[in-house]
Image (cartoon, rainbow, N blue to C red; front, side, top):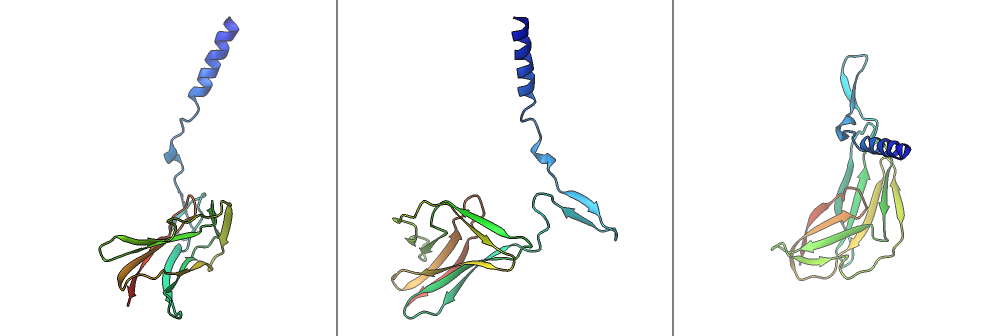
Length: 162
């Protein structure tokens, strides 16, 4: 009986120590350089010169509204995006009232396959978008990436349909 009580006490003491670390302990470390200027060095993320830059540009096409969505890697490291399906981007068209006129993923099915796309430094992830036929007017096109656990790199453009 004494042995059983001792094991329970040890087990409770061991469990009490689990999960008590403060999440704020992982602060970037400041180090002085030889010139005396301080710089932040983060062990987890590394030094980044720039960021991922999304863009949306209109492309000339015969009778169709075609846009190119790109996310350019302006960092000093490769960036890998993980997708849980065949869908890599999504987009929507909103009219002047802000109502969604078209959303690409609505009523669509995508392959359920894990995929990773790596974008090297200075390169871009790009997808071409062919807009559906809509009534004449002014619209806002919003495009974003559907990578899981990451930023969506959302960007917008004004679309005028005549």
